[in-house]
Amino acid sequence: MLLTRPARSHPALRFLRRPKAALLASAVTVCLVAAGAPAEPLGVGDRIFPELGNPGYDVAAYDLAFTYPGSNDKPLKAVTTIDARLTDSLKRINLDFAHGTVDSVEVDGRRAAFTSAGEDLVVTPDHALPLGSVTRITVRHTSDPVAADGQDGGWVRTTDGLAMANQADAAHLVFPCNDHPSDKAMFTFHVTAPNGYTAVANGLPTGAVKAGGSTTWSYRSQHPMATELAQVSIGHSAVVRRTGPHGLPLRDVVPAADKKELEPWLAKTPDQIAWVESKIGPYPFETYGVLMAQASTGFELETQTLSLFEKDIFTEPAYPKWYIESVMVHELSHQWFGDSVSPRTWSDVWLNEGHATWYEALYAEEKADRPLQDRMKAAYGASDRWRAAGGPPAMPKPPAPGQKIGIFRPNIYDGAALVLFALRQEIGKDAFERLEKVWVQENRDTSVGTADFVRLASAIGGRDLTGFFQDWLYGEKTPPMPGHPDWKQVPPPAPSNPARKR
Image: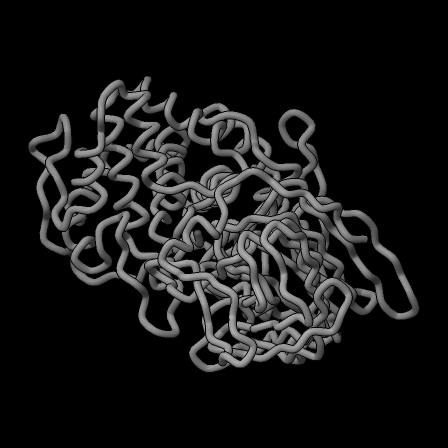
């Protein structure tokens, strides 16, 4: 997810074969709802966010249209169109949506009744929707960039406009959706803003049309995406283009006034992509770039094809060059781990952050002489404390109310990277490197879980590793490190700057 740092026209329907949110619904009873029964929030049974996502359908595509009023403290007008296939017979459809005013809802072109229940928008069409049918839901609504009390994430207000930070449980603060990473879908964006602004979103541009005093910018993804990875940037921005490995189109979005100053950092991306490709295989998407936002967020975020960064990380002299580059590689690595291969549940987030931290640390070792083993030994010394505070890597403790990013603790960053180090020690470097490549190749554009990783690791490692992973991923205490029996837990150091999310 976010890398924390020390403080200082409509798409064609495309139904993809992939794990679906409905696979999680074993904990949820889905049935035809009696007409007079009260609306209630639903969920797909996620342990961390129980009411996140909704059972009964699989989203194929989102078409999102936003109209920016020229001020980032006023609601945007929006139209969200959702194409979905029914995985159950439904009389009602629950969507996640919690921060905007709904003006109207249509289901298959006919007006539908709607109400709210918790953080759900509950839609009642004028006819039951049968199992296996394809439906289109159109919601006309507002999207409020000013956060309500107790809300965390969604729109980020920058000095000159807006950006998005929807991880982990916040896309539904921006638009109605099935807000769970197990239900990935195709995305199309249309962003209308006053002339003088530039709008950029995930995927590739499909046009920019001026009409009077405004311009509508359109973008479309070429791969399915989790809702938490959606990105829209609106600001007085420059779009810097270049070519990456194998002719990959790159585009960075930076404050126009800072383009020259930031160019040396932007120019590093092609080589960084080539470096990650040398470790785990071809880049999985149609484009990439860095979005440097003038905002104070406390984190960086791997939004798909356009990673979000605070601009100040690149201009603050307190951050050493090697560290900034490793942070860039962390978010880049997420394009494989977390974006292309997404977590099936939020308890599987260690697969995202552990791998991104691993390649961040490996890059620092190879490029800046910062030994990975030293970092892992330090992580081992703190691992029991991290587990006590945040839970084991694959069983993170739920966040405090109103602090959804609270699941992003050290146990799923360096603590999870430590599990990968132990695995490499256990099965050997060659098997480990093969595992990494096969994992991202076989699971591209899907949502998978910890059990899938355990099975593949066991197959490639040549033996059943269930017990190994049980101890390392779920144990209250950290197991002995293979090959390093001398590694011990160490007392906590003196207090330092708080960690940031990345």
